[in-house]
Length: 465
Ligand SMILES: Cc1ncc(COP(=O)(O)O)c(C=O)c1O
Image (cartoon, rainbow, N blue to C red; front, top):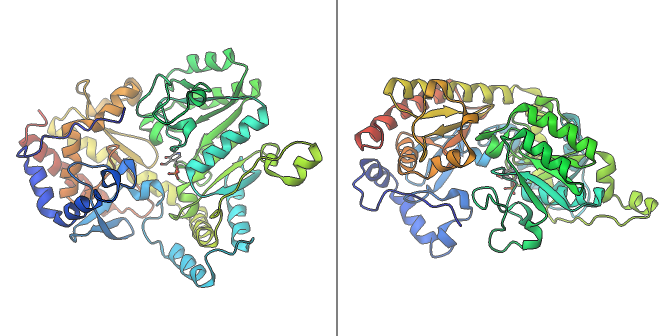
């Protein structure tokens, strides 16, 4: 069950599509070529786009340029990795210097220690940490450690929360909400995963209290897809209390929220310290990299000496590129900037301005959509299949996961994305975006104007009442 794409019919006579095609012939050519190499022409499922994806040639700060020379304000932000924007001078300098010194020593090096120290200093739960190469790997390791630590098998996670693509987390995100495995995932793995409803605190508590075999609860601490499907703060404290009482390991997936919601991540912002937290994206300054952090007694399962002293088997973990010196240089430089400057607060403020300005446009234009989100995120609720909303009084907690997810699949949503690209603004297919610490007032103003033009274009095509 892949997500259907309700794209407007080919030759639909859409001026929005015609304009997009006329501006992006270079992308069209490359997309056709890519289909001869990659399934769907893609290297990442989330980059699927109607009628074809954009091909980008260069990027700087908050902007990027496609192969046809069109300039865009970038709210895709390297899938969330770029809170410092593209090519931050401190990160670039650190990476350039390290490239000259070597890219892989197959040995320890100073940068990995300094990078680890910065993470320890910023992240409340980071008594110990271990680097990985991605967020998917970090979550895989965290779940393995939780199982070994507790001697239990079951994992609780929330419908709609994304934790990467490995087997334990590859269903119940966009489909398979009943917990059945997606193709290729073993029944035996899916049977060990219990899916909870993030809007149902009492039901989640009951689930945890009814099962004695839960190794871990893993979640995105601001809600699914960085708060596109939001979570109430009280859920975090309830989970902390119940997992502690019942001996389950609480894992925050901070792959997106880490060093973004606050320098110390969502756990620092909400004042709830999990037993383990996973990071990627910003942690490596926009290069590949990730890590797990957590309580010493859990991460001691990776320690040769402690394991031997306790007479237990050490948990295996490798990874050729873990903390390689180039990614370490990039991550250390990025975290040093985030620690000293107001990057997270600026990014959150820019998103607040965007949400407000876009909702003003929707109200003025009488469009029953809403722009919502928290921290440095903004998302469009387009009514999906379920009807209109009042942009001035929209509360995403009123809408079920399925309704929010359905929004990005409609013809109007696809055209909104193209209309914004025509106006020089790139958002993601989730129908929303992320701001950075380098987006400017001017970027925000131009984005709101692009939204105004997009609404007019959509009205002209009869997509909006
Ligand atoms: C919350 C969350 N967890 C995990 C991942 C997986 O990280 P990676 O793409 O580095 O494997 C992502 C990626 O988008 C994510 O958003």
